[in-house]
Image (cartoon, rainbow, N blue to C red; front, side, top):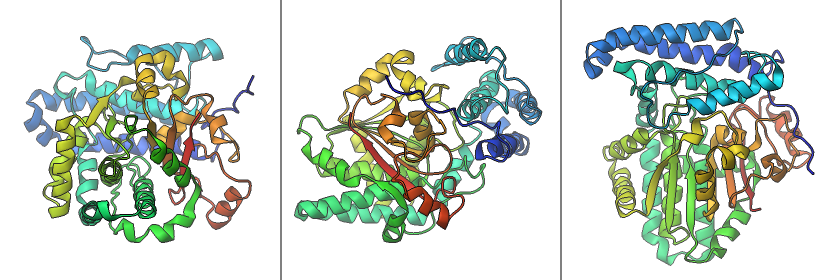
Length: 437
């Protein structure tokens, strides 16, 4: 029997990143949403109708109350369901977890005592609730403009990356096995560093990729704290030709999305993947997480960003229309549950993932839910931190911007800390970690 995990990360300890997130970052994000509703109320009214003006007031009131509750350490409350419920309604799951917390702790969760992962997810669930209960604004994404600006501001970097992948595809048949591997690893690293573009960490402040990422990879490589690219390559090339089904669980929209899809394109065109299922969020989440609308908007926007970006966008649209790429929306990704609960909470999703040849999880939130957001020592083996969650071979690709870091050699964390005191929250250090069983 395995040992129990350590305590979850929590804002109960003053000065920790979890504490600073609840004290500072979450109220700032709420303030930005409130400001958006006030500043853009006329535009919103034009888009959704006259009732949206009153709707803005209603949502601002709800979010202002939520902000006050955070700042004064009030108890959390049950979520309210829209009647009739929206698609992907997860209110019952949230409220079951709420009641479970009270049963286990004999008190309701509070903003500075519950686990950090639960609290942060709860805030975004409450933001969604405030819009869903408002008839005029139930489909409004308060982060849409931020996400779109992030991609638009990354235009030069997008076109540079697109030009690189298009040139690579043109010579693909001539590449040796070693060159195929080398180019695959470069695109995997580009996907890793694309994860730095995170609007949640910046509290909604402008974030964009402004440099040609492919030219930076050599200097960035030393900041990859654990890099299992070689093992991943061996897994991919050993897959039977009829078992090359990849699942990609996305993180951020904007440049990161483009870098992820470039990696998938290489896998498709090189024959290392035959089908890709791409999981998006069903609602606005953690400011910049990719929704279905973000995905489709990006494909259209790329057509105006340059000839190479346009060519890629057309290729991706063809993958989708042919069924070789599928976009999946699953309720589970916005529940409070970590991934060890998946087989119980959404068993059909677990069954679907178990049929994959490889599952790629992008970004911090996926990493935190994979590892439970516990205060693991950095030397904890990745497999141990997964706590038996491995429906198929899985890969975690993230830059460290908070939450646990596991799977490091004994001296690696010390060396990273010596070079940067905020190494595990700055996004300057990355991980490419594989678990196959």
